[in-house]
Structures are given as structure tokens and as C-alpha cells.
Image 1: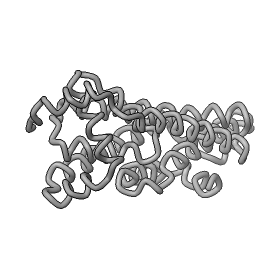
Image 2: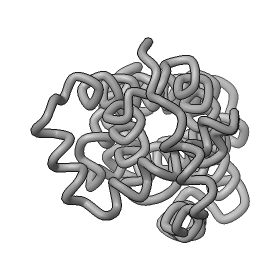
Image 3: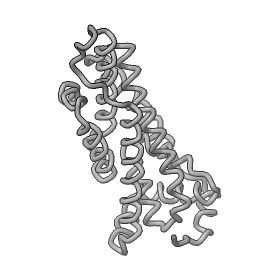
Length: 222
């Protein structure tokens, strides 16, 4: 993958590929969007090293902008969240029944409702790092008809935090460990470890008092 992404780093297409992958993985969590972002950032680290060490005028690879890469990943993350949120909002009885049959979605919906009712959405941020957590939270917020103003700001914070973390892992991993398979592997491992810790937090059952408070508050429209 590193070689394939490296071939794209000299073209603006790298940003489009990253953005598309991040948008779609809210619906297809199996897509390795995090790995792609890390690999692109690692390739940027390699390009930076090449540019610095090459003779004047001999650099052969364009250095992609880490700022643009981060903005693309963060913006695509929020956009994907909103699409999933709106689809779940309009999902109707069929989606409601599907969520009711899923213990994971039901639990996440209860916890999310309790968190947003208290004016805090740290769960949205944490879930962004967990495998499929983004999908569960976005769909849960939409199905529960949570207000956009309750969900969107936390989705934006989650998207920025995830993008900065992923790009930082790839870039500094490439700088410190080299742009080969070792640097990429260590960076990806760090992303998976963060995801595992986030999954533990997201899967913890909501406290009965918090769930009761969430149920007591009637869902509000946009």
C-alpha cells in the first residue's frame, strides 16, 4: 500500500482518494481509511526527507501538504457522519426495528443520548477512534432524532482529533523510523491500540441513572 499511495503523492488525487475513503467508511467500516491516511502521511515524510537531502533541483517527488491532508480527512469525516445521521433520521420504522434488534446499537444510542442530554459529547469523540464506533454513533444519533446542534460540533471535534492523530502518527513515524514498512507498521499499530482503548470505553454499559435521564428527555427535531 505504501508504494501505491507513494505514487499518488505527487498528484492532488491523493486528497480525493483519502476524502472518499473517509466518507465511505462510515457505511463500510472495513475500509482502511485510517491506514490510508497514515500511509499518505508517511509518504509525505519520505518526500520531505528526499527533498531535504537531494541535490538542488534534483528532488523527484512533490511533497504533499500535511495541512491539506488533515483538512481533507477531517472534513470528509464530518461529512460522512452527517450523511449517516440524516439517513438514520429518515430511516423510518425499518431502521428503528433493525436498531432495536442490535444490542450494540441500542446500548450506544442510550449512552449517546445520555451524554448529549448532559451537554457533553466526549463519547462521540472517543467512538471516532473505535472500530465501527463512528457508524454506531452517527446512526444512533440520527435514529434517536438528536438535535443537529448537539451532534455536529462533537462530530467536528472528533473528525479533527482523528485526522490530526492519524496524520501525526504517519508523519512522525516516517520521520523517526523511516518511510519503509517499519514506520508504517508502528504507526498503524498505534492507531489500532487507540481504537482498542476507545472500543472498551464505548462498550461500557451506561449507568442506569444516565439512561433514565436520557429517556426522560423527549427527542427534539432540527
